[in-house]
Length: 128
Image 1: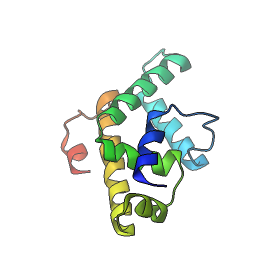
Image 2 (image 1 turned 60 degrees about the horizontal axis):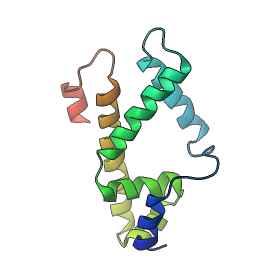
Image 3 (image 1 turned 90 degrees about the vertical axis):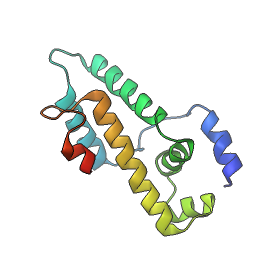
Image 4 (image 1 turned 45 degrees about the vertical axis):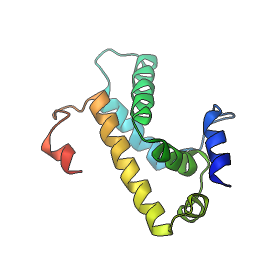
């Protein structure tokens, strides 16, 4: 897999079922997090639309290379070694970049959705 084919793949909408993109543990944590952000009286459909929109906006705020990193890891399900080879970087750089990009994505998502008990600019969030 080379960078050009990765770029082409990013232009196409996902096809097929998305089941399995998250482990069962990650899925359970995501659902628990979603319950925290649920506006009182919101239906499951409204909650889904809110979270989906926030995630799209958070992803859209990432740099293109960061989006590619996430796509390789979570859509293509590549290992850190495979990502490193595809992007021409070391294994350590691939692991570091994955962690850095996920922190940026989490921070952006929380700022968009809101976090009960903390403002978007709180010291705890800036220190993550």
